Amino acid sequence: MAKKDLKKIELEMRRVEKEDRIKDKDLFEVVEEVFDRRTVLSILELKRRGCLKTLKGVVSAGKEARVYWGIAPDGRDLAVKIYLTVTAEFRKSIWKYIKGDPRYEWIGKLPRHKLMSVWARKEFSNLRRLYRAGVAVPEPICYNETIIVMSFIGEKGQRAPLLKELLEAGELSHDLAKYILSKVLEYIKISYTRAKLIHADLSEYNVMVWKNEPYIIDVAQAVRVDHPNALEFLRRDIHNIIRFFDEEVGIDVPDPEEVLKEIVGSEYEGEAEGVEGLEDE
Ligand code: ATP
Ligand code: MN
Image (tube, rainbow, N blue to C red; front, side):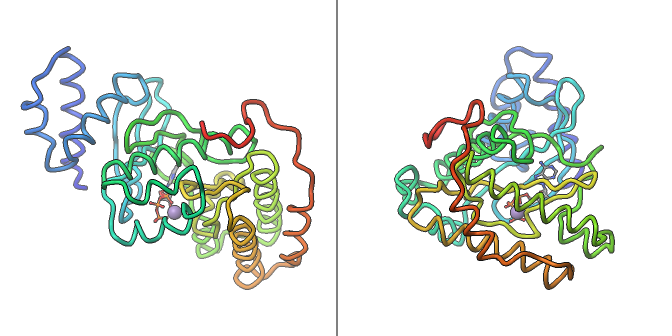
């Protein structure tokens, strides 16, 4: 998105702040070329609720979702993930995560907009469970329709690097790598034992590193431990992460099957405060 479009939204938001009531027509004439009408309304609703003051710039423009840098009313940096469209590939790619999951199987057939909002809600709910369980994920702040608002990993609109990017930049020393590997394996275990979730798309592309600490991102597809393919997803996550540190970083790594056994064999830990059973929130 061009800078001038963001400027328009900013101006528009400021104007709406001043006027209690605004004719829809006025508002959408200005911003419809950027976001659709629903998305604009949803952004304004988040603003009204005090979740968001300003949308600043694009951090990442993916196929289905964009992540923006935003500012909270208290001045804090935010990451605002907005689902904008549903491609046929997206429908296909999520099917393997929802098939057999009684909570979500039905969403495969939803129309586009509904599917995006259920998916965003699922991401927010997973984020909250993981956060409460003590996994380092962005702090979930608000959600509405197809938008989730979370803490910004990085500062002043500069996002932290992904684990993959850190290696490419030559900034992943072996000591740091060892530490990050141990933390990520610990988070996989805490996710499983306390949040009762499996990320299911974990790799060096979904871990950010900020101030030498790893953060797990992109959790919409995470599945519950009672999902019919839970073990397969967990095994794949563990293998992906260990393979990266073994082959690309070149440090000593544990045997992934041993790690898997240890995690699955461990007792469910006492539940973290605010993380209940398996229900979705
Ligand atoms: P992709 O298909 O590229 O994986 P996605 O649509 O699944 O994208 P995410 O992986 O959640 O979305 O986010 C896309 C990118 O936005 C991330 O790779 C990261 O660079 C950035 N990002 C996501 N969340 C945050 C955050 N909380 N703070 C800062 N940057 C973030
Ligand atoms: Mn991602």
